Amino acid sequence: MDIFQGLLQGFSIAFTGTNLLFAFLGAVIGTAVGVLPGLGPAATIALLLPITYVISSPVTAIIMMAGIFYGSMYGGSTTSILLNLPGEAASVVTCIDGYQMAKKGRAGAALGIAAIGSFLAGTIAVIGLSFFAPPLAEFALAFGPPEYFALMMLGLLLAVTLSGGSIVKGLIVLFLGLLLAMVGLDPISGKVRFTFGSIGLQGGFDFVTLAMGVFGISEILYNLESTVKTEIVTTRIGKVFPTLKDWADSRWSILRGSVVGFFIGIIPGGGAVISSLASYAIEKKCARHREEFGRGAIEGVAGPESANNAASSSSFIPLLTLGIPGNASIAMIFAALMIQGITPGPFLIKEHPDVFWGVIASMYLGNAMLLVLNLPLVGLWVQMLRVPYSILAPIIVLFTTVGVYSVQNQSFDIYSMLFFAALGYLMRKLKFDPAPLPLAFVLGPMVESSLRQSLLMSGGDPMIFLSRPISGTLLAILFVLVLGQVSLYVKWNLQKRRGRAGTAPFASGKRMV
Image (cartoon, rainbow, N blue to C red; front, side, top):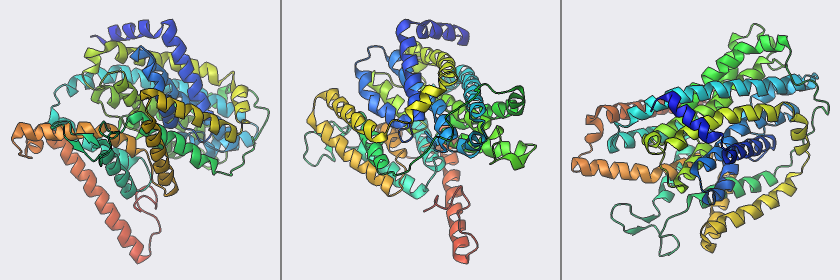
């Protein structure tokens, strides 16, 4: 199908009354999630996964979930600028200059350029998604089990390497996710494994239960411990539309942030956080007045906010074309597609063009909705910051428990959710990043099936992975990546022993713990 024909079909689907309503609901919920500190898009999508069982159209369900994801990137700037507290992890960098602008009485300009930059970057990224995804899907049709195994292993390792935090801890969480995915029936022989005699475990763990426990309940429990008190820096936002000078200072930052965010978002594990950090570093080097950074430079708001919104859109490329979720939020959307009986990957565009093009078209509309929601209604979002989290938390827990039980009407699912909630809480207390867990859980069965199918094809000869050009190249990249991380680890330990470096050479000192 021609790209322009596909887009026309997508807009005809997205412009229906139901899909417009759910795109708007996703945008509103996403913005609210971004504004409220402590509840990210992954946790919110996880909490709302049971809704996908009752939405008859898969396009409608994914349009809403996608709106929550990229909408949260818009809302996260509000708390970063007004409270110096990021509502979403990708908005951490926005705090640096956005809060300083607010202290100088320029909160409106900071909020305005963040919203406009987000809209432009999101639109640019969706245009790139429209034209880049179909050729990649065509290329992926040449993939067989060996290629998919190599690609998924590379994607999992990239997700651990680039997501931040300790790589060793990330690998532990990754292997835990793979182990949990193996509970239940063997996909080839049909034998029961790792159930320890439990009938409830014979069907394996449910992804909805795992996601709502690890990213929903545990997030709430962890945030309830927080005693951080914040105060809005100003009650008068002022004019939210940037001046001509603000626009002149920011236009190239928005463009650079859009390009950086788009390409980093495609990489599994890259995502909005890495792209915003990279954008801020680039803007600091390109700025004519570097001394202004950290004191209220508008470029320090425009660039990162554009980058994280571009990355949130481009992260749909590996999901829709290769069937590989690059971060925890996209893993939740992957699960929502699977719940609807749709397998993401290279066949999606041919087997379900309505889903593929409908979701892409809805992202054009969603970005326009978010611009309207974030510029005139800033005052409304500010008032939401006054709602105590202690009131919101019990309500969320109640709806989560009801939602988990309603999926299969089994009390076993509630016990499983509590188990995963305790696991997620413990991971956060011990500084383990839970993001690799759902990625490994989702991709685990696919990795196992691809591995075993490949070995069946070759009669048990593992050289099949190296003899095929695509899988061999992907495994070579994987080997180089592992070798690079090992060399960095060895170098850091040598420096630490000599007492010449207190931090790791890769990102942060905690990274190799």
